[in-house]
Amino acid sequence: MQNNEIKFPIGTFTYIDLFCGIGGFHQGMSKLGGECLYACDIDPDCRKTYEVNYGIRPDGDITKVRAEEIPPHDVLCAGFPCQAFSKAGNRLGFADATKGTLFFDIIRIINHHKPKYALLENVRNLASHDHGNTWKTIYDSLVDAGYYVNADPVIFSPHYLGIPQHRERVFIMCVRKDIGKLPPFVFNSVKIPSCSVDSILLEDYEIPDLDKFMLSKEQIDWIDNWNEFLQGIKCDKLPGFPVWTDCFCEYEDNPLLKEGWDVLPKWEQNFIKKNHDLWVANKEFINQWLVKARQNRLFFGSKAKLEWQAGETHSPNLWEHIMQIRPSGLRVKPGTYFPALVAITQTSIVGKKRRFLTPRECARLQSFPDSFQCDVKKAQAYKQFGNSINVDLVDLFARFRFGDKNVRKVYSQDSQFPQPKQLMPALNFEEGYD
Image 1 (cartoon, helix red, strand yellow):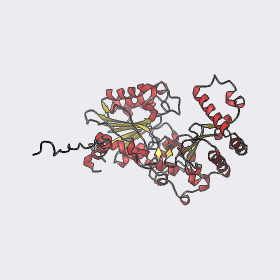
Image 2 (cartoon, rainbow, N blue to C red):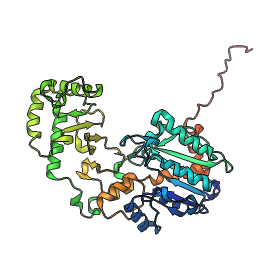
Image 3 (cartoon, helix red, strand yellow):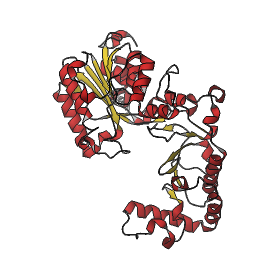
């Protein structure tokens, strides 16, 4: 990109990094030439990783930092905590006394410093939380502070750029009204490029302590058992509902029905019935399969459940797909891209490699350079990348917000939804010709 394509020239701006984590915003903004003047994060492990990589020691609890203690800056970046809005949390939103209100600390700092730009990020559920009232509160607060903001939440994912991770997030671009306008960000989901998980995978010889990431024999046998199940059942199509092996029995023997049918919510009744019907249609095979599956000591609780989310196929093979061990069961996704990295221990299994993703591969999914120093504790590294923002998306939305002509043209109405050219009406030489 040419410097003159951006209203705010690359390399001449300062920024602050609120709720900085391990520096996804830092990576993206510094790549554009920005200088970080201040960072904060309440997680001490993230602060250590941030300091190791950038030489800046972040502050801790932002609620205890006065706005005047923060240096004046051109750009405010903040991936404010998402638990209050996430489907994985309690979804209390601004009713959450500890996390939901942290947005208002952003507003407090914006109102004091009036930076030229701001870039905020949160989970997708923010867009619809509380029937849209949460988004309205955020939008109105930023507009009242003197900023142009897109009226509708911008929802984007790394896989929209060809990065093999499905991770939809809300991005909020803010431009101070005296700086310039902010056009709509338009994206046509039909134009999603193809992804390949191979683009981020390490070769086995590149992984120190490879054996620590490989599946154990017991885990392989457990997945093989589920493979036999998928390949042995007879049904019109693979189950699109969660498979619960507790339901492979007569209704009166189902442990989920101890309290009776009517006390269960409709969605659970529906899943129980579908599993029972699948068992009835495949009783002989499933009963024999269960005997073998239960010999594996891993086959209990959530590991006795399966969520097939890899689409239709005539020859299902778990080892061709991406898997996660979730509280809801073994979740199977297509082998094209990874599900969103998460901050809890649900690291994806690369079926064809028969191993878990490494922290370095998680870093690549978040577009961090290979020079980035991960936390030496593996569990912390997974958590930190699961909480981070994708660096390439920071770069994209920063450029759009700054006024990069090329980026704004790409994500314009005309480029994303081009109108067919109007054809000149055909001449009829038989009418009025002499």
